[in-house]
Each structure stands twice: as C-alpha cells, then as structure tokens.
Image (tube, rainbow, N blue to C red):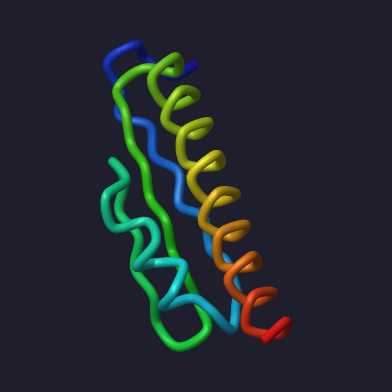
Length: 80
C-alpha cells in the first residue's frame, strides 16, 4: 500500500500532428507539457491521492479545452 507521504506521478503521452500547438496552448497551465515531433507529454505529481486526482482532472480539462480551441481555429481556416 502507498504511504500517505509517497510521491505519486502520472505522465500522459499524446500522439498528435499538432503537438507543438497543443503545448503552446498549455503554457500557462500548472503542469509540465513538452512536445517532440508528433508527441506531447504532460506530467503531474503530488504527495496525496486526493491531490493527484485533482491535478489529473485539471490536466484533462485543460487538454480538452486546448484541443477544442485548435479545432475551432482549424474550422475558421476551412470556412475562409
């Protein structure tokens, strides 16, 4: 069983043709986001399960928002 004070960490790898744009969209978010070619890696860590869960939820909402913003921007380009 994990001790209450043990560090928990999650790393998410996303494969996308827009990894650089996604990374730039996440620049102000409270977690690390790095891109390399078509890969975006997002990392979070916390000392408690409650905190890692909250950070996970924040990261997922941020990723969804960034993707939706990029998709709406792409739609504007197609409509022109």
